[in-house]
Amino acid sequence: MPLTFEVRHRDGAARVGLLATPHGAVETPMFMPVGTQATVKGLTPDQLRAAGARIILGNTYHLALRPGDELIRDLGGLHRFMGWDGPILTDSGGFQVFSLAEQRTITDHGAKFRSHIDGARLELTPERAVEIQQNLGSDIAMVLDECPPGDSAPEAMREAVRRTILWAERCKRHHTRADQALFAIVQGGTDLALRAECAAELVAMDFPGYALGGFSVGESPAAMHAALPECAALLPEGKPRYLMGVGRPEDLLAGVAAGIDLFDCVMPTRSGRNALAFTADGPVRLRNAKHRRDAAPLESGCACYTCAHFGRAYLHHLFAADEMLGPTLVSLHNVAYYLRLMAEARAAIREERFAAFRAGCRDRWGVA
RNA sequence: GGGCAGGUGGCAGAGCGGUCAAUUGCACCAGACUGUAAAUCUGGCCUCUUCGGAGUUCGGGGGUUCGAAUCCCUCCCUGCCCA
Image (tube, rainbow, N blue to C red; front, side):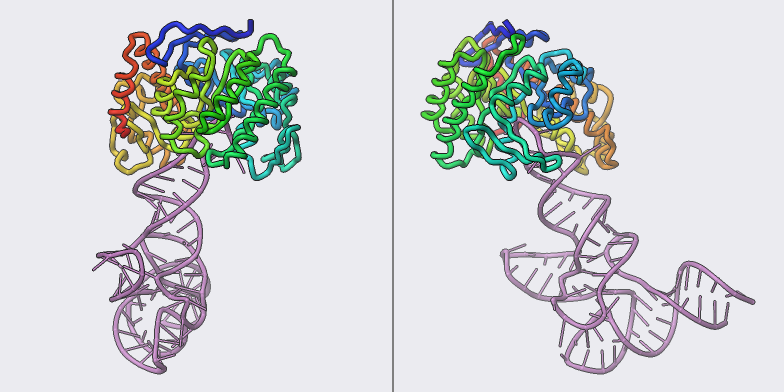
C-alpha cells in the first residue's frame, strides 16, 4: 500500500487522523507548505522541518517545464533532487489551467499552454500529468482537473465538472506507480448539486484520497465557508480529504470544522515575502512605520527561530533595506504559525473542544 | 577678478508661453496577496475640501503678456574652468 489513512479522533465533523506515506507518516489536519519549483521559496528543508513542516507540495507544470521531469527522475526523483526526505504531494497543473487562462485553450484531450517562461507551446493531458508526476516520484499525485473561476456561468461550471470526471478516469487508468497514491479532485464551485454529482462519480472510481478543488478562486470566503461542510460530507469518511489552495488561518479552521484533513496554500510564504506575518493576534504588516522601534518579537510566545532571535524593529529594517533575510525570516514564522495552528487544532479535536478553540482564535484575530 | 553652466515638490531629475499642482525614478505612507507567471502588485504623497472643487507653489524682487516654472531686468546662491 503506497498510502494508508486512519481517523483516530472525532469532534463533530472535525477529525484527527494519521496519514502514512512511503516517506513517513503525518498527523492530520495538516498544512502543507507550497514548494512549486522544488523549493518552498526562501526556506531550506532544515528550516522547514524546524518550523514543523512534515509534507510539502511540488508542481507538475512548473517542474515539467523546468528543469524537466525526466531530468529529475534521472537524478533520483524529486525528494533527492530538492533534499526533502519527507512526504511530497504534487499538484497536477490543474490550477495552472485556471491561473494561466490567458495563454491556454482547453479541450477534452487536454489543456494547451503557452509556456510562461519562453512562450513555447505545450500540452498537458491527463496522461502526461500522471507521467510527469510518476517521474517526479511524489508520494501523492493529483489528477488533472479543470478549475473554473468562482464566478463562472453554470454551463461552464458543469462543463468543467464533466471534463474533470473524464480526466480523472483517464489519470487513474494511466497511473501505474505502486509507491504513489493518486488523489481525485471534486469541482463544482459553490453549486452543491453539482459538487454532489462530481463527488459521486469520483467516489465510484475508488481513489485513495479526495480533494476539493475550485475554492478560493474568486467566490466570497463566506460562500466557501458555507459550502465546505456539505462538500466535505460528500467524501468517504475513511479517506483523506484535501482542500486545495486554502487559505487564511480562519479558512483553515473552517475547513477543519468541516472535516478536512489536508490544506495547502502559498499564503504563509508569499505573504512572508511581502512582509505580512500571521500571528495569534491577527496579521502584522511589518513594513508599517509603527514597528520601526519595536524590539518585541513578531509574536510573543512563538517558539519559531524568527521570534526566538529577532524583534519587529529588525524585521522592519530588513524589509526597508530590501534584504533577503526578511522574506526568509517571516516566511519561516508564518509556516511555523500555520503548523502550530494545525497542531493546536488537533489537540483541541482530541479533547473535543474544537468549536471553542476555533471561536477563541477568531476572537483573537478579530475576525467577525 | 574673468568665463561658462545652473538654481523645480524629501532627494535625483523632466518641463522651457496656455492642455502644469507640474512627466518619471527613489524615498516615504497605507492597502492587497488563498492548489505561486508574485522577494509582487495597487493606491497616496503642497494646503484645505461638503471630494464637485478651492487656495497657495517651480531661489528673492520687479517687469512683459489675456495668460509665466517657461520671456526680460535685477539681486542672491551653487558648480566647473581661467587668473
